[in-house]
Amino acid sequence: MQNSPPVLLVTKFHAPNLKPSTTYQFRVHECDVIACAPWSDWLTASTQAGGSNDVAVWLDNDEAHPIGNGVVAPNGSFTVKATMPAGTAPGIHTVNAATRGGKPEASFQITVTGQGGSGGGPSGGPSISVMNTQTHTAYQPPINLLYPSTFRLRGKGFAPGVTVTILLDSATGPQLGTAIPNKVGGFAGNFNLPMTQTGPHKLVAVQVVQGRTNQTSEDVNLASQPK
Image (cartoon, rainbow, N blue to C red; front, side, top):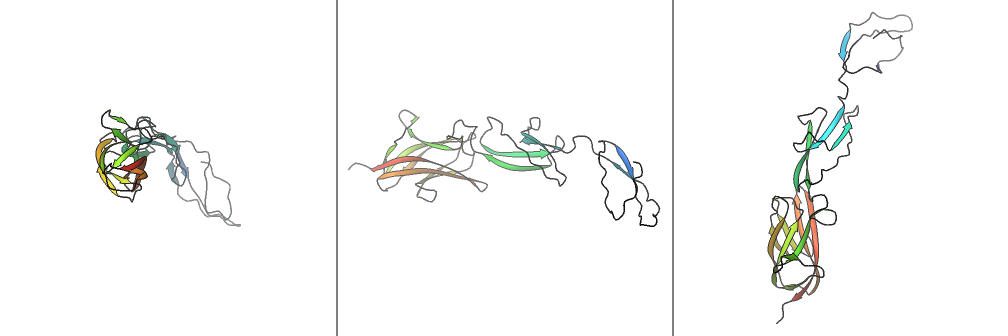
């Protein structure tokens, strides 16, 4: 670069409008109101390639299909709006980020609890259903059960392989049993209703995955067994 005019009382220099992938040389000298010291030795520096501050975010090992893109700020941070691919299986996934393709420069794990609005609750999250063991279909509200008895419950949209606990009325209520979802986040099992009070209740399913709680419930009406 050409020598710049002397600037008094300035200890920093900003070089604007540099071209990418280009080598530049810089030198400085100290000046006061009377004279200037000799020039320093040349400093040779090269700018990065164009787009070197672009960051890509992808899911698991699929770096060929980014779920978001952004630009790294001068302080090293970036903000990216990422879109989860449709059909992503419930479970634990890894989000990766890098300014260059291939090897991730940063990663963290997330838990997907439903498949884009299918097979789960109204928003695609976990759900449970009381099953009719004769027709193998879910009972529709109002759901009436007798206690004490055994009922069959189906769950969807949970993280695979992580225990789901079934409780009565709340996440701290009486435990009715546990189940482990399969690789697509579903389970089906028989659970025992204890002696309790007649009237409206809730069946509550709770799953804790790396400190995050997946919870859903189903309203039921309970009545005692006829004598």
